[in-house]
Amino acid sequence: MNLRLIGIGAGVLIILSLPLAGAIAGPDFAGQDDGKGGGLFKTLGLSDPARTPPSPAGRPAEPAATERPGPAEQPRTDSRCGPELSSPHGVEAQTCVLVAEGRTWGRSYYRNTSGHALDAVLTVMGPAGRTVQIRCSVGAGDEPGLCETPKEDSAGEPESYSAVAEFAVPDDEGRLLLRSGSNSPAPGDG
Image (cartoon, rainbow, N blue to C red):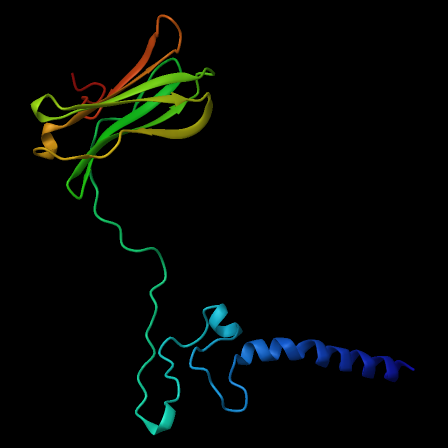
């Protein structure tokens, strides 16, 4: 009786493994390859990228094209940032001017551990009196965040731009808790 159970178990195991064997083998059944190199190995990234499919009608085979995984290459972004600053009220920030592909914008990285929601105003000042300003809501919490102005066409050298972020309590008085600039001196620099 044990031999009968072992035989049934082996038969079930073979039947259940057939779909897996077919997935590993891919679409190449009876020598008919579809040229796509499918199957489980391809899905798991284990197939040979230089694999050359058989050529139809005896023509010389061409190597398969290799795919490059990952996102497309991003354009270079240059940044000029001030120091990381913190206030005794629980606000930390660093403000930067960013330049890429002929566009300039401001960004402030922050963390608000004050226990209160805050307002932030980020201003980018450029040559010839050009100014861009945005208001951001800064939620209470320990998670880092960012406030960013829209990207504008650059007008002049990147050094002619500066950015300032001001973090304040959103009440009638708007008590300022921290001011962070892209060209601020580091604490202790004067």
